[in-house]
Image (cartoon, rainbow over all chains, first blue to last red; front, top):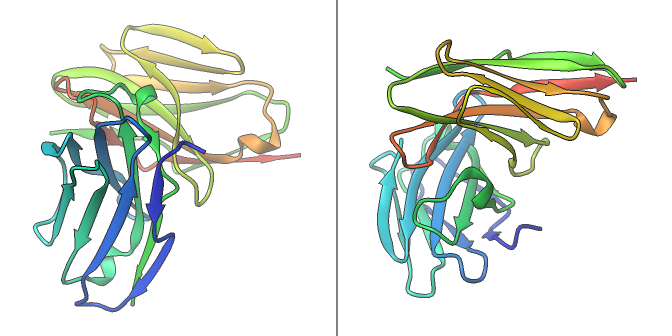
Length: 115
Length: 110
């Protein structure tokens, strides 16, 4: 157990819909990272927040957005969902703005299925 | 551009040694990561190589050649629990944000 929690564990929805994935970092961690893992694309970094501010952006679609709240939890919003958005979405947290890979702690993931 | 490549699947026998290769192309390379991921679970960190050479951690070792854009993960004394996907990823530009390969699915059989 990494100490990072993600809800929901599973999510099934229809094309065109909007969903929100939630992540609570480990106690004291200021950074949150979002990753998407699909069968055809592998694991991809989406976005990082540090203490409420966006710090790094990866291959995140314009239909997707994220934020980090004052209590440091983060939400990833996915809108106008398409079949190809079906994937595992992981959140990771770390205490630092720049965190080495052994300093990032992954949550259990949210499996999104778009029908 | 950036590119990273590793075999899709490998099989090996319990107790044996297996080497999983990874090649990459990028500018401003900083380091290379290996992660292990069991099906349906989160990735777990295995190693991070910055300098050329072999780094050993118990049954797992990781090698890097920066000039060749090449790395491998060596797993010794394979156990059934080592059946998992092994993800290679590089980091460039100093951000620690990794670019992942698609992973190598390792199947260990008795």
